[in-house]
Image 1 (spheres, rainbow, N blue to C red):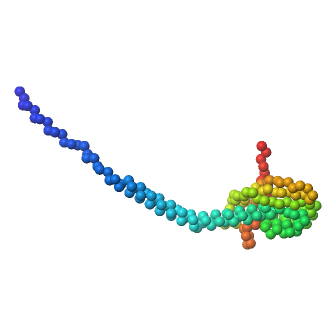
Image 2 (cartoon, rainbow, N blue to C red):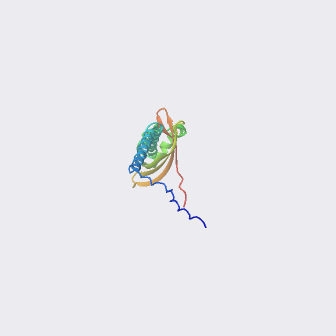
Image 3 (cartoon, rainbow, N blue to C red):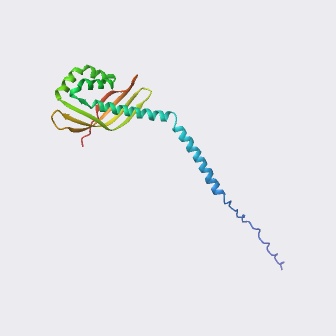
Length: 186
């Protein structure tokens, strides 16, 4: 016969004790994350609010404003004051555009006086599409309403889009090219 089996020893408790969670752990982690985000955002804001980004944005706005005025000027002319209007065109232009105006001045003046029309351009929207600060070159798209008032007739309004090129000169930004934006046929 065999000896009675020894009673089995109770098994040791192998389960790990349940850790008690610290009730402050989650709020501390959330607060630390918020502080890190605030510091990072503050640094990013300071970096973007100063330096080259701001200067470039200011230059872009300056070019847009000058371009708008020049495009409006080039779409405004009173046949009774052609010399004054052409002088303004010359004052706001440079390069090949300036030279073309200078060389065709007399013929253009005669033609404008014969049409007996007053045109008034108003830029309704404009955007700088290219800006090269180092080269002193910029391009601008402008939507323009032009009121055309022939002498003795009712005025009509035309809407055109123009692409302008601007060049920085010693006296500021000036129009160096101006042309219509072609409208695609639908």
